[in-house]
Length: 309
Image (cartoon, rainbow, N blue to C red; front, side, top):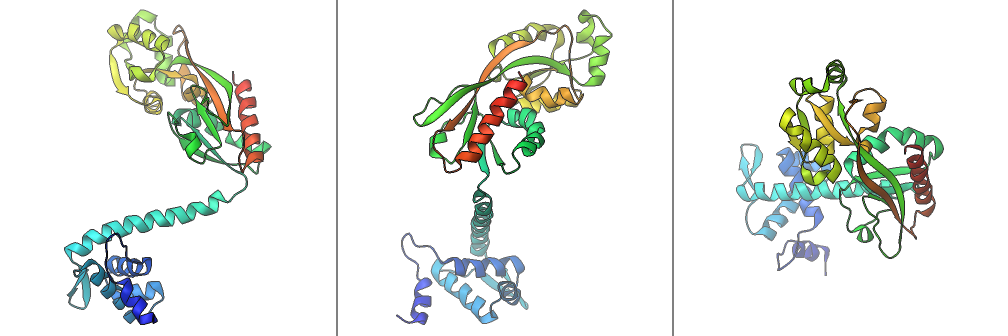
């Protein structure tokens, strides 16, 4: 078969067939730049080569994708629809290729856990991690309920319960508590008043009931009739942001609060008792291609958890 025949065959549509990436790249460049000549320049091809690619793609889809407007071109309705799909596909492909370089780093460790734990507890400790293990590159992925860890490329999981899966080992890690906090200005106002006058100064920032342990939810419910609700959120990070902005009193897990309390952006309220929370677990596969980096991060997390109890 000659090269010309191969090129002609690329333009022939059929059940389940897709046009070649070469044709789609020429179409995308012409559509984005509004000019075949500029597309050819961007792709380092001749103008006739790009024009031929567009003709092949039009033959493949069975309808015109561009129409002439003066000296330029513009997309037909079919071309607009195709451009949206091609742009998304090429963007996804580019992101995937960009990530390959990251995944080849021998120090990469994929850590999955809830956003509020990674942000409130781990993020502020990454400098300490780098000081001890400069070769570790943590890839942090947020997942409230990681359930398919054995089917994806995960090294360590932070969860409220052990995974208890074959080929994985689980270790008890941190036990959180829930604390009533407020922004410094509001905390100072409340500290100067007797507890019975606090409802006159602040309302409660609430999490959905399913997001709170029983003891913390009961403590919050006991206050609601007197204080009222400022807002309700479905994620600890959103409630944390509201507290930081001074919107009211929040009851939040210690793992979300640690950095904000340490640097003074929030204050724990005296007279509001802490409530027990979850026991958190660390889980990791027993065998992994990145075993040394994974083992080092796993051990470091356990040591830091012990220091932060």
